Every structure is written in C-alpha cells, then in structure tokens.
Amino acid sequence: MSDQIAASAAVESAAASAQTSASSTPAPQVPQAKTGKTPRPPRAPKKPVEKPPMKEYKVLMVHGYTQSGSLFRSKVRALEKALLKTLNPLGITLTFLYPTAPIRLRPRDIPGWQPTEDDADGDAEIESYGWFRFDEIGATYRGIDQGARVLAAEMRAAGGVDVVLGFSQGAFVAAALAAILEQPYRAAGSAEQQAWVDELRAANGEKKLKFAVVYSGFIAKAADLQWLYEPKMVTPSVHIMGGLDTIVEESRTRALIEKCEDPSVFVHPGSHYVPVSREWLNAVASTFKKYLYDDLQPKKED
Image (cartoon, rainbow, N blue to C red; front, side, top):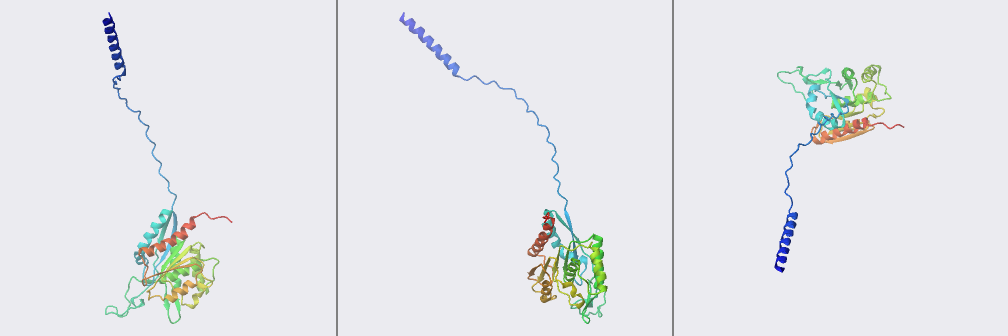
C-alpha cells in the first residue's frame, strides 16, 4: 500500500515538474506581417535667399603720360580683380571708367626719345596720349583745359563718379580733381580756368569724391595752378610711390603729400609703375574697403 502511495506521489511530482518546465519555456514568436510606412508629405521647395542689391561705386581711372585708357586698363586688370574680390562679399561693386586723354603725342614728345632712320623728326603717329603738355619756357600746362573737358564728358555720361585713381600725369590729374570737387569750392586762378573747373563740378553733380588713389603723383610746377593746394586738400588720399622711381622725383611726390590733410603713404621697392604683386594689391584693396564699407554704414544722428 505504501508503495502505491509513493508511486502515485512520484507521478504527481513528475507531472508538476513537466508543467513548470512547459510554463517557463517562452512561446514561439509568430511572425508579424510587414506593413509599409506612411509616406511623408513632400517638402515645400526652399525659397531662394534674396541677396541685398549691390551698392555700385564708380571709379575714374586716369592713365599716365604716353598711355591710353585701354593700355592703362591692361596694366591694372589685376588690381580690378583684387578690388572686386575684396568688395563683392561686402555688397559693393565697382564700375571702372577708362577715358583716353585728348592730346595725341608724337615720339619726340616722349622722354628719352632718340631719332631713327624711319622717323628722324619724331612725328610718326602712335597710340600715345597726354592730358597736357608742360611748357618749360613758360612753366605752364598747355592743353589742360582739353583734358579737363574729356574728363567732364566721361563723368557726365556716367552720372558722376565716386573715386578717382591715377598714375603719373594721371595721378596729378586725380589729386587736382579731388581738390576741385571739394566744398566749399576754391576759386580758380583765372576766368579761363574757372570755366573748365565749373564744367567738372557740374559733370559730377556738384558732389565731392570719397577719396583719391595717387600712384607716382606730383605737385604742379605751374605757378597758375597753385590754387589747387591752398587750402590743403581734405579729401582722403592714398599715395603709392616707387622707392626707385627716376621719372617722378620723390621730392615732388612728398610736396604733394604735404598739401593733403589726410594722406596715407605707401612706398614700394620698384620704380615708375603700378605694382600688382599681392602685397600692394591688398594694401589698395584695404583702402577701398575702409572708405566704401564705412560709407554704407548707417550714419548716427547728432
């Protein structure tokens, strides 16, 4: 009897153990049918970012003696590119104007000319121009009125200019133009001079220049043009001169600088040319940035 009870207990114990084992075994996972994701609505196209309009400034580029507008441009294209590269990201663009002087020169008008078999008199026609001729006997600038009227026509057609940049004889013209356009106006030395001076002022809409860039500039020798420097020129000016320049004496460049109230002076190690190495391009570009970017900023009211 006791054996039957023990056997029965063993059977019950085994059954309970089997149930416990079955309950602890995880049920097999029934694979779920895959369902597609709900598609997102299409994104609205991004609106293009509207850039503010570029502010345009016009630069009058005045070539040197024996050059032309097109020749001068070919020599300073690197400067153009450097200026635009610096200023375009600031919302500034420049328009460069390259007039050609009206006085056509002959070979014998060019310093250092020597006669040749083909041109013993030096009267051959060449693409070489000047804004005036210096008369050493009378110490006057012959034809300067013609040059002034060509510049006035260029300025008038452009609706006025903001900056002037000149080289050599063109640098003299650039500094003179800056002084002429300053206000209050200075009186010219004679009625004849006053006529072309008034024409220049009218051509620029009676506006002064923001600044002048003067490469290898010089003060006038002509006694009848000294009114250009009295009083001193107040328009900001940048003067770049060559330490080895033998065409324009350093003393004459320094004399012009002394007639300016707000000059910046750079001396490059070369001679009589517009330097276009990176160092000198960056120096001039920084000047344009300084004056033109400041011009764009809101003016504080007093």
